[in-house]
Length: 113
Length: 112
Image (cartoon, rainbow over all chains, first blue to last red; front, side, top):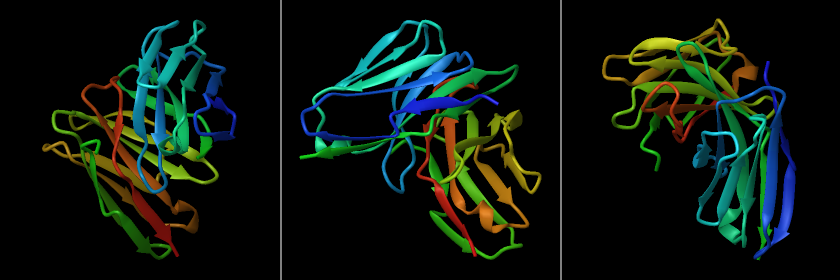
């Protein structure tokens, strides 16, 4: 089945630093999404990307849909303590009658004040 | 708050038992998805329903089944539970079959 390789697995940064994480796949996806998950909570949608090459921002977050449709990256600028959490990329594949998300393994972000 | 609700929040049961997890989608959403999150497997897609019909199926065990009712809420039934079924179970919903998905808070299932 499809697999998403997400890196890095974990990051330890100082408040104010920029962060970059990415996902690569062996298969093409129709849509790339980025989610953030806090402990004991459900994933929260941050950004959705629908077209190859698309660059989208949401506040301090910027994400891009790779032109090959097999990769995506997420940047967080000027990190703050509340950015702590696990970030997941997800690729959405449209099937004949439905769709599913395939998730990366997650990037655990720690921000030191 | 995504608008997706799940009950119960926590469930503790014994091996061999059967449980039912419930999900109510966001208002206006017709599609419901179920995912399992475990430490060793990560977030895995189980099944999708749209307006009461099954639309996509992942590696869902035969011991697991789901359905979506006319009021659009969905239930995931897990039977003959094993220790390895302990996990977080998430429901997500979307307005259409291929639109972005919004996740509920999850049900933590512990099988003893």
